[in-house]
Image 1 (cartoon, helix red, strand yellow):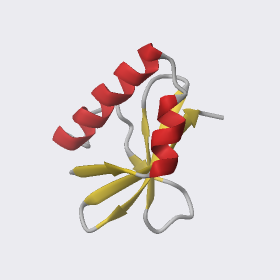
Image 2 (tube, helix red, strand yellow):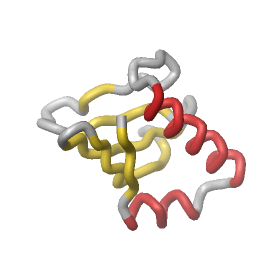
Image 3 (cartoon, helix red, strand yellow):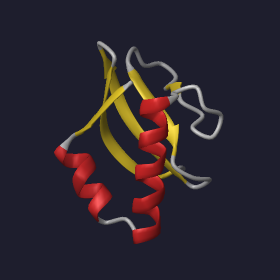
Image 4 (cartoon, one colour):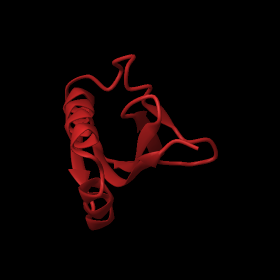
Length: 80
């Protein structure tokens, strides 16, 4: 899967701790290589046509819009 980021995502990413930045990049690479990997828990958001989430770690998630095989990440932050 191809993954790209929006300016909003990049701004949120820039505010993460160094450890979360490393983990986020690792999970994004894993998503590109194997979206079905269990540690990602990659899934469509309920009630959405093309918005998806994946797990960065136990407390953090990233959101994106899937269009023609490309996931455009627009948010990263705590899972609430």
